[in-house]
Amino acid sequence: MPNMPGMGDSKAPQATSASGVGTVESVDAPQRKIKLNHEPIPAFNWPAMSMEVTAAKSVDLGKAKPGAKVKFTLKKGTDGTYTVESLEAAP
Ligand SMILES: [Cu+2]
Image (cartoon, rainbow, N blue to C red; front, side):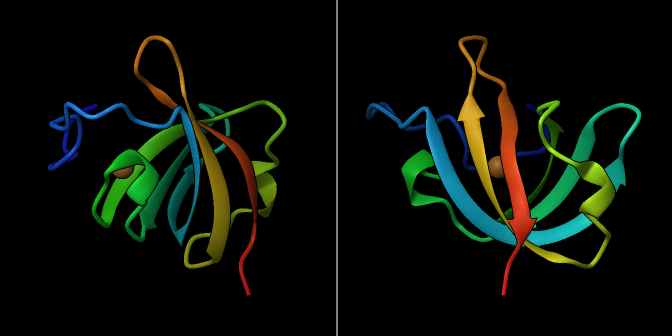
């Protein structure tokens, strides 16, 4: 993925799924894309960052509004890309 400094440098085995929290920056529902500004995700060795990811069909992007704080789970595919598997409002 472009524009994701600090990712992918670790030689240590990494988790294939993880949860995180962050803020929705933008949503492109027709393209199934969501841009999240998330807090660090230690399971992936990720610092805090802004990133755009694809959302699984099961995720209702209609509920994701820019500026909303959300909890989400990400899954790493065999091709190395990440998919949002669940998304819900964070307290
Ligand atoms: Cu990231």
